[in-house]
Image (cartoon, rainbow, N blue to C red; front, top):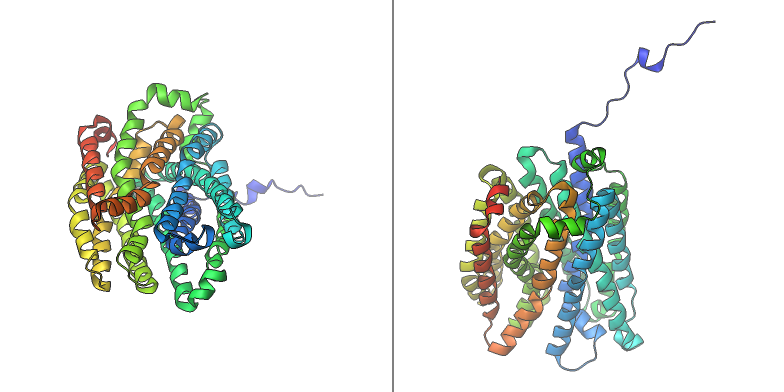
Length: 438
């Protein structure tokens, strides 16, 4: 009776996926989840005029829009809470689990918004249910961005961390493009009555396929190699939050200072400009949505370009450029947009996308570099979450209020420029930014 040879004596064991394959898989998995997270925020912002009529009592149109924008801001209030919860989980248990949980929460609540009763059927319960859904979505996004951006940077080759990190903002903006595009198609395909009665629900229900894909991809990803190293050395922080504020509070404040200029500029373009074009300038829905989709598509490509440039020239020079442009461009760009024609509205948005894309290309790798692996997701996520809640979530409301109080259609430009100036001072004065910028 012949004795069989051991399996490894006759054929080599299957080779594990190489680092490049794992990195690409991680980029796709993290990016899909990011896209879902911001797909919902885009469709909510794009449908603000419709939602304001359906979920709030009839009356003053401005009050209805301000109420809807305030509800939009509610989603940002929970971001710091989500960042704290998910950050601790990611720094103690690894990046994979919170990434899966975050995309699950966002996907489920997005679908639930699509089946919610409106004010004429449920009365005050309708806006309350919408508020709860927005709170849960804010919790999800608060845990998502810091975790996914850190995960991407930790999977990146050393000299390509800017490019890999930029995929976090690239994918989130791509989700915004997808959301705006879906709303545009529905606006073109349906009558106003159909859109207001049932068509507005479709974009939210389409979040289900993205949920399924995102969960599947994130279930299959490998853990961050940097976290695995910390885990193997038993060097995880027992209390990431305590360690963060005891030892890395300067980096935390630096992130907040950079978020001021970035979040206000990004939120103006991604959450406010469509309402501005339609409600203030009076442009009809189809051309207004078309300008947003076209400009955002160009902007999302610029994000990757600036991510690459930050690898080549350093994060700090790219951030300085972003700050300077965010100071000088808003006023002339809003003047151009204010001309009201399709070409001028598109051109103004395209120019404003340059500083936003520069910020989005540089900050993920920079923020990740400001914190050690043991508290990276907590530091990145909590600081970014507070910055988003304080600045991005309130931007559409503040911008609308400034126009109403001043009577000037270009009042939001001064808000953007002032924020950009503060962030420029932070970037130039921070020694930690200088050390972490390469």
